[in-house]
Image (tube, rainbow, N blue to C red; front, top):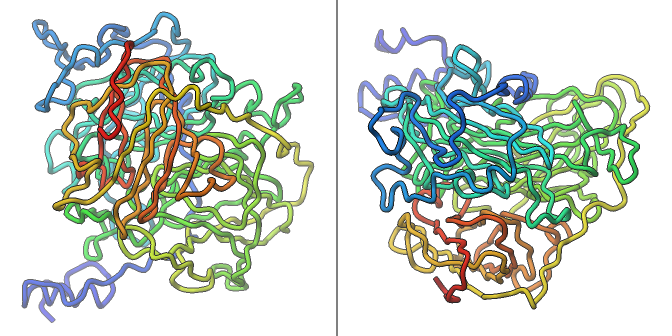
Length: 595
C-alpha cells in the first residue's frame, strides 16, 4: 500500500482502500457508508432567544420606512447600502422596504441575531467538524444551529434584527450554500417585508428588521398559532442554506395555551411546560466517507436524502426523561425526506428495538402550528418537509431505567418521495432517530391534555370570491406550477379581505410535493376526493400532495398587503423553480382561474 495512504489518520480499511483506488485509477473503489454509533450523545437544547439575542434597544434605531440597511451605509446611497434581491427582476420594489402598521403594533421587545459560520461536530465518531451556518448574539458570542428558540406571546409585538455575517467568499462555504439570506418565520401572519419570503434576500454586511405584530389573523382568537419555525428562504438556495444550519424554533402562547402547566386560570390548557415543552428539529444529513465533513449534492434535482438523522443538530442523540408527560414540538427541516415516526421498547442491549409493537401512543395536539379541536392518540405520525407536529408522549407508563426509541419506519430511497413501504422497527432498514431514557421515580404531574382546544374558524361558501387551480409538475427538467417556472414577479392578484378556494394537483406519478402557502393558514375541504383525516381537518400551512393526488382548500387574505409565495417545500424542488408569487391588493381583482 502506498505510503501516502498509510499516512491517513486512523480510519476504516475500506476508506484507506479508496485512497489507493483514487491514486491508481482516479476513482473510488466503492463509496463506503459511515457507521455512527447511535445514542452516544445527549440531546442539546437550543438556547432561549431571551438569553442570547434580546437587547434593550436596537442601534441604529428601526426605520419603519426602510427595514433593510447596510451595517456601514454609504452616505449617498438611497438604499442605505442594502439591495434586496440584487440582480433580479424588479429588485428593490418600493413597497418591500416599509414596515406595515408599525405604529399600531409598536414593539415591546427587541432581538438582534447574526447569521454566521462556525465549526460543528455532528457526532463524536466523525474525524473532524464541519463548517456550518447558524444564528447567535452579538459579536464574540456563540453561534448555534438550530438557532435560539423564541418563546413569545400574542399581544406583545417584537422586532428581530437579523444581520448577514456569512462569509462573502466561497472558501468559507465548504462547497455549498450562498452567503445571501432571507429569514422566513414559517407561517406567521406578517407583512411580506417581515415575512422573509424568497425574494427578500440581502448580501453579507447588511441587516433586515422583521416586525412581528403578534396579531392573530383578522383579530380572530380561533386563528392562534402555537408552533412555528424560522429558516433561510433565499430563492434558488433555500435547500442548501437550511441544510447548512439556518433554522430555529419559534413557539407562541396566548391566554389559553399559556405555557404554564400549573396555571389554574379558567380555560387554561395546562399542557406540559418549561423543560417539558421541548423543540425537536429533525433533519437528515450526509457526510463524506473520506473527510467526514457535511456534504450536499446540488445537482440531484429529485431531492436530497442523507443517511443519518439528526435531532437538534446531533446524529441520533438520547434524552433523559422523567416518568411523566412531555410536549414535543417536532419540525421536519428537510430538505426532502418524509418521516413516519413510531416508538419501540428497547431490548437488553439498550440500543435495538425489542418489538415491532409501539411502546407508546403519540398524542397529536396540533398540526402545522394549529392546535386541534381535541387531541388524537395514534401509534405513528407522518411528517413531510416543513410540517410541524405538536405532540405529547406520556412516559408515566414506564419505569426508571426503561428506554424507548423513536424510529422512522417510512422507506424512502429517492428524494422523489416514499416507496409506500413501512419497515418493521426491528429491521435494520428502519432509521434510528433518538432514544428516550426514563430516569427517576413517578411524581405528581401537574400537566394535562384538555378535552377540547381550538374552535375551527370555518370559511363559508359565501366568502369565496374566486376559485383557482394549480398543477404541480416536472416539465423539461424543471419543476413547474401551471407549466411555468418561478420568475421573481407576481402572477396574479388577490383582493384583501376575501377568501378563495384553491385546488392543488400533483400531475406526477412518481414525486411527492409538500406545498406551502404563506400569509394565512388554509383549510382542507377534500384530499384526493375524500374528507381529510381528523388530524388534518383543522388548519394547516403545508399540504402534502402524494403522486396523482389533489387537495381542495380554502384560505383568507387579511390584514397585510403585498407579495407572498406558494411553493413546494421539498426545498430542492422549490429551488429549481416550483414556486410562484401572488399579490394581495386593496382593490377588486380579476379572477384568473389558472394563473
